[in-house]
Length: 127
Image 1 (cartoon, rainbow, N blue to C red):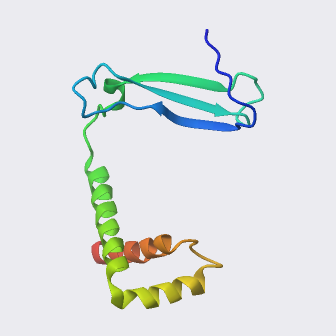
Image 2 (cartoon, one colour; image 1 turned 180 degrees about the horizontal axis):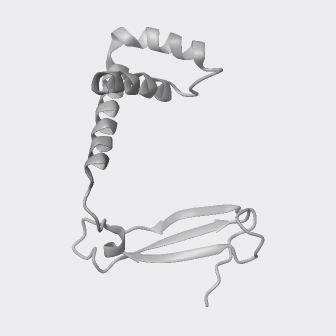
């Protein structure tokens, strides 16, 4: 069995080291290399994991449900609303002032704050 040794000082590795180019004509032959390393996850010295995944193991095997489609539509609508609100100069001054007023106790970024506002508006309209 192969063993992965990470450089000293690395406490966490998580994610794809190589990815599959899905647009390539050879995508079916390519593989993705996923790695995980978490020192706090276990007391064992062997806390490394490497996985090879092909394109078929990455693609979805079940159809999208109606609930998932509703959530996707909600996310897309809120995302568009946030982008429009960020570009609308009539909202910028008041949004920035309101964001700064709540920053210590609420959302840490302006984008989070605007997302919250637009999500509340969307939920109120489509409740």
